[in-house]
Image (tube, rainbow, N blue to C red; front, side):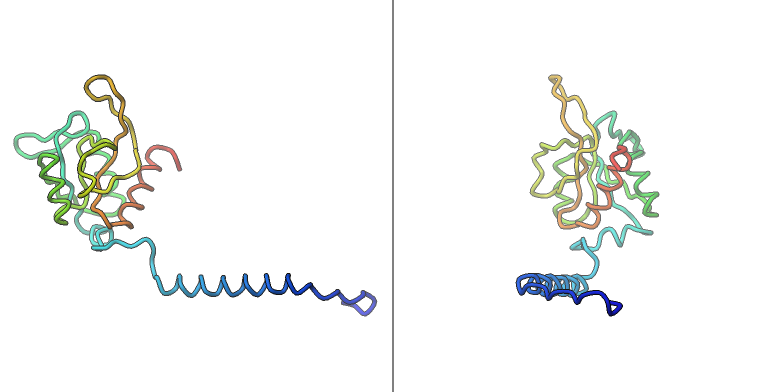
Length: 174
C-alpha cells in the first residue's frame, strides 16, 4: 500500500476458517510424514539388504522366460531382466532353481526375495507371493494370452515399488 490505495476489505470469516483449516491440515500432514520416515517400507528390509548385497531369486524353469541347465546355470528373458535390475541396485544374484510350488513355499517362509519363471497374473500362490504389475504377455497352451508378472515377498513394499518402477521404465511406460 502506498497511501493512495484504498485498504483491502477484510476477508469473510468463512475464507479465514478455510485458510486456517488448510494450514492445520498441512501442518499435521507434514508432522505425520516426518514421523513415518521413508515410505514405502519393507517389512523385512529386503530392498535395503539387497542394495549392494544379495538378491535371492527363485527360478522355475519355463522356456523361453527361464531355463535351468543341469549344472544349475540359468538363462532366458526373465534372467536377463532380473540381472539388469540387480545391476541397477548393485546386487549380486543368488539363483535358487525349483518348482513353482516349492519356490512359493520358500517365498512364504521368507527364504526368497523374488520368484520368476514365466509367472502369470493368475498364479495360485498369491497367499505366499505378491505380484508385480504386468510387464509383458505370453501365450499359454491353448492359445490364450496372459500377462507376465514377477513374484515378490509379501510386505516388501519398497522392493515392490522399486522393481515396478524398473519394469515400467524397461517397458517404456516412464
